[in-house]
Length: 277
Picture 1: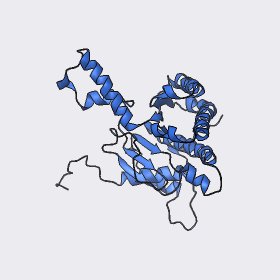
Picture 2: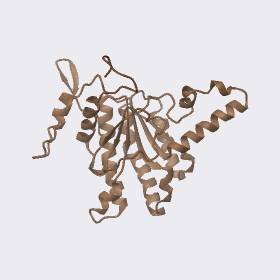
Picture 3: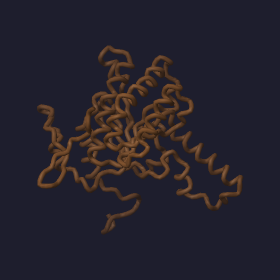
Picture 4: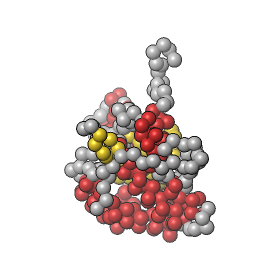
């Protein structure tokens, strides 16, 4: 069984084992340089990722879109491992949107089979490394095989206490808000909630991410600059990080770079820092 164990002990302190990969002539920081600069006490609590560009990555290689989706699994594995090693509290990945049903049936079937394959291949490692697997979205529409695999992952990781891995499946930000409004309306109808009691906290408690911190950082590869109906309520004050590389090329260094850049930003949440700046 593979392990997330990328920690080494230095003078009684556990640190992440450094890798020294650096693109020749790129001028980019290596993984070890990024790790040295990242403040481990100021990590984002919640990272959200739109896993985009699989099809374009495959097309550029003269291959079908499904080829890109399969290679995207390697990037997901690396993102999950790195996030867990760092101690990120929540990682949410956009796997299948409410709009993705419009794609060719063959591609949809492939995506669902890859979901089942990912769970069966990774659940032992996820469990051993204290990761909690959850899904956000209406999974009742997924094929029975996907629902069965997800149920197994939920139950297997239920007692874990480490990073939460949210897999967004049949998820849409607008449909999530409609669902929350309907749930609240039902509570009002039953007399359990008064209209004047509806506030942001009540809305948040009726979202799929209830009880979790909002994403501090949204990562979007593949050169697009839109949120694509993802976590619309939750990303009110998220920092966005974009990169031109397609998702199948996304690696540990990209995630570390995103976190490093995030930590260099000035987050004011609509207010001002001392001195009025």
